[in-house]
Amino acid sequence: MPKQPLSVVVTRRLPDVVEARLAELFDVTLRDTDAPMSRAELQDAVQSCDVLVPTITDDIDNALIARAGERLKLIANYGAGVDHIDVATARQKGILVSNTPGVLTDDTADMTMALILAVTRRMPEGMATMQKGTWEGWAPTSLLGGRISGRRLGILGMGRIGQAVARRAAAFGMQVHYHNRRRLHVETEKTLGATYWESLDQMVARMDVMSINCPHTPSTFHLMNARRLKLMKPEAVIVNTSRGEVIDENALARMLQAGEIKGAGLDVYEHGTNVNPQLRDLDNVVLLPHMGSATIEGRVEMGEKVLINIKTFDDGHRPPDQVVPAML
Ligand code: 8YV
Image (cartoon, rainbow, N blue to C red; front, side, top):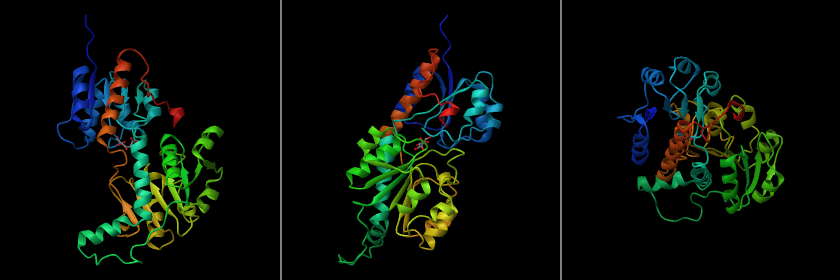
């Protein structure tokens, strides 16, 4: 008897080609509207499907996983970060979790460089002048930014994305420094031209630009707290394309407002869409709506990873991108 196709529920609209391929391979329930699922809808989904495909906008916490039906065997996340999923509880219930690493690395690193340049070269101020129609022509001293070449970049989190940032920053002439849970292999350090700092405090105090590239885990929550932010040089800037929770957003907003650090470029926020309003009014801050990995190529490749993870699982093997709690 032919095998029953897996029942797969996808919580958000995905690119058309991804949805079409999912529909070819599985008994898939796609979303009609592009709004996040309500809690009730998520509960129905986990009770009825074999595989759930959530995104960062779904809170897959222990209470939700506790209500999962017997059928649910795989949570195939559409995204690299899994801090919205209680991976340990899922594992206890025998539910595998997979993600989509690697395919968003370059796009996120590109956006990190874009934020560094936008803040240090004052691009939003220039754009606002043009949009308001108030430009009075070139002037030798107008809108002077800082040159990034020769500046020290401190990368917090030297995984795939941190290393992709390092390669780009070196090409821009920046001096690359990093702090990571584990020191990189010496050959990798050499290739990247990156200097390791065991002490995050000491690195933070000496950098011109800080880039946050570590995942959000219990041990990285508020790693950039008020005390550590205060160690930054007043002329330094900070960018974050990782997770908002790594920075104490209120402390950062206060310091930016007080001119205690020069600027910030943020793509992610501590409380999701509930962005500290103080940040919106500052000239020295560039705010983006979590679009670091938002390229059509990246989104399609994320879909392909999800498909491969589900298909491999369906064929009786471990999904290639299985996340195990020890990795976090
Ligand atoms: C994704 C991200 O777009 O993959 C991640 O962890 O932060 C994003 O850039 C998002 O998570 C999709 O679910």
